[in-house]
Image (cartoon, rainbow, N blue to C red):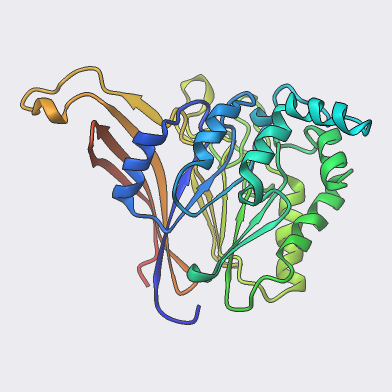
Length: 318
């Protein structure tokens, strides 16, 4: 980066219906990020919720997840213009993409010149594992028919990144290669044998970018693999550092990300009681290096927002 400046990013992990524009906006105004990243899974093609996310007045980038293509398996076939336009209006995936516009970074890049950052999107609609989820959607819209093509498309999106920019990769699911135990950042927690549920195309793309470009890619942000493990087995690792390649992998999928406060603690003023507590993952970058990652919970009650809990997940003390 050209000069010493701290950039704060707020990650909103898998939403699954837990989003309210006025309350989340108040929380973000307290946290003061310069950029907000959404890892997708807003709902089962919940178009009104995505409209609300699009209305958030912060610089942002979004990737759609598997739940955002829950019903729609393909885009309409080409036909007469009027009929195709009507079909598109009934297509939940298309409506979300239209609403988000360039802020949906699946297979493309969004530059933020004032921050000296570029966000490169991974494969949208990912369900993890070795099969392309919603393959007909991917083929129709992006021309992607297999994992190799997907990896290449991600890499091409990164080409042309301004030389003085740091690259952040935003995907719905993380890459393979980060562990196969249930508690690993992309580990299968629903199977006794465990397994790696990461995206192989994302691992391939990251490797290709390292081998064939001089781009700095210090941060990969994703969701999909929820923090709370199935069967009450505890929590998964949410941050993994690859010190050899100088990459930090951050999973923002804290689900549910909103908790309602129904009781007033003893000694709490009425104006500070009730409301909700909302989760964000904060990432701080200084001169292209990840300095700190914090899981932050913000209570929002009426017009009042305050941080009620913070957990440091990573800190560079050098």
